[in-house]
Amino acid sequence: MPYPEEVITVSKKGKREVRALIDRGKYVRYEYLDPATGKRSENKVKLVLLSENGKQEEYFVIPLKQEGRFLLLRAETKPARKLWDREKAKAVELFEE
Image 1 (spheres, rainbow, N blue to C red):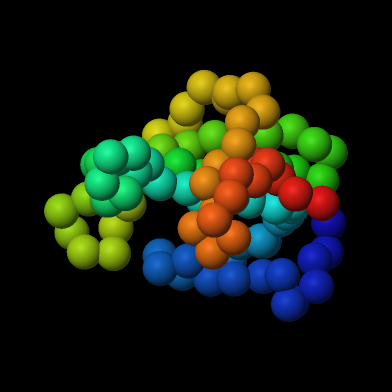
Image 2: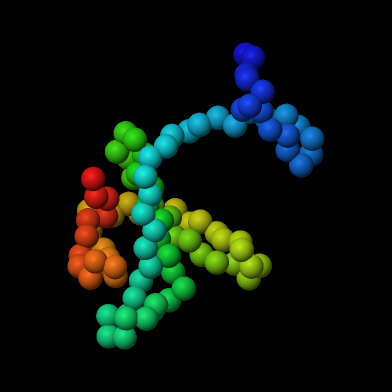
């Protein structure tokens, strides 16, 4: 199948490849705080992806020793939950419309 040149990329090995969309949607990133101090309890961040069809995927974002590198570990998808919004100083839904 012929693809438009604007979707073609060249890998480091020189191989031509097509950038193909899997899905798109929204995301939320959140961290964990110690409720007594308000400081980060661990160097742990969660990334929740929401595709256009409503499917959620969750990942822990773990920093590696090499600066700027992260490992994504798939996490079990949890039921709806609320998050603390520091700017609004109130609990908010995971995904707001």
